[in-house]
Length: 132
Image (tube, rainbow, N blue to C red; front, side, top):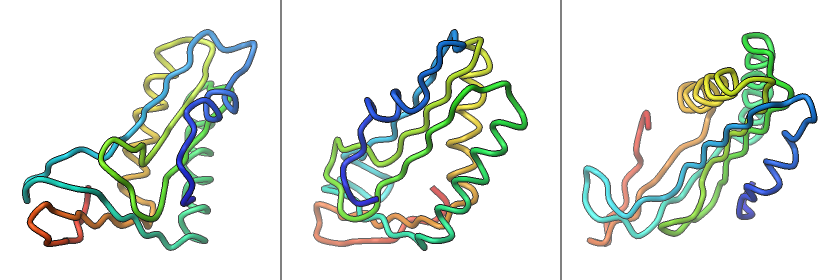
């Protein structure tokens, strides 16, 4: 998805009258990394497999917690500092389940979804970042 992510749309997607808690994680582009000051990021994905894996992760959340709804979104393309790169939202009857499912969702995404990040540095250099 190369369009900016909408947290409001993610919240609307997970809304449920039976949910007593909704948790949202928003990952944003920060202005620095271990390599230096960052001007932006470029995300690339194996789109077909990424979508499949995101659906599988959502399925895991439904199996492990009594979540009502789940939204997992990740941007691709060029992003500026401050822009949202990923949104994970979960609603559940109780807050603990919403928090745990949301945390698990972002961790699984980082482990298993074929999305790659390239940092654009103030120095003019660019480098692919593995395993982040």
